[in-house]
Length: 146
Image (cartoon, rainbow, N blue to C red):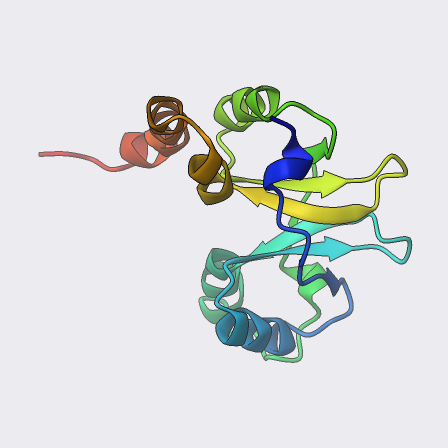
């Protein structure tokens, strides 16, 4: 199966100059937790997540007018092409402990997104479970247990 078979092609995108307030409203209204940030050529230069908004904007008491480029998570980004095998992407997702990848065309422009939930819908349940364990290993390692 190819990445193009499972990617979401309707992607909300942002520019580094867009305000975090506007991005937050899009994320709320569209129920999104992740938006790619693109340069003028449509190439991904970073991402903004709901977690970024909380930890970098709210916690720092930045105004809603703050440009997203000041608080985004910059590269290196996990990317793939539509003709890449999903299993190869899964390996890289697990290695890099990333739950989302940006799908780019041959020129490097963003054409879609693949999330762990997209992969899980098309994947064998055992394989999806293994990927989930790999991705969540970082969170469980950060939690101290009594």
